[in-house]
Amino acid sequence: MKSIKVSLVAVGIATVGLFAFKGIQTGSIKGTVAPADAAVRVWALSGTDTLKAPVDKGAFELSGAKAGTYRVIVEAKPPYKNAAKDGVTVADGQPTDIGEIKLEQ
Image 1 (cartoon, one colour):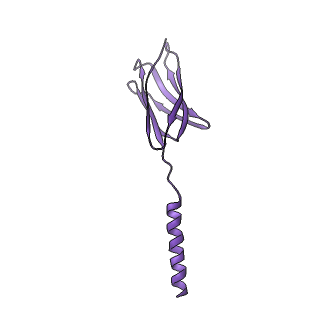
Image 2: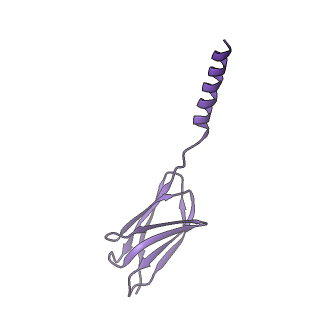
Image 3: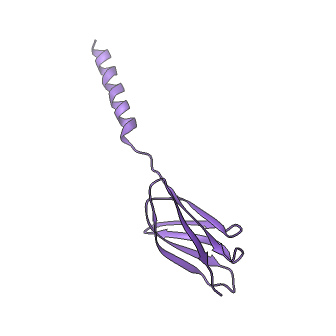
């Protein structure tokens, strides 16, 4: 009888432990760059988090973004200048589309 009680308590604790931790849900930041061949990569910065992704045919997607506010920086090819967009908000598990970023020469 004592071993059954101990087993039930152990199963109960294990069950509670499995449901006690919520998995980390990450979002993403996506958009486009114009002209399409003017950028190398895109960076997203928030506190100590840094994400980067290549620009492919003018499009990019930064995945694995934790919820928060980011600064997105587009690393341009010469003769274009780098560009930045501040205040990009990412929610848990949601994609954020920041639209088109136009690069200037």
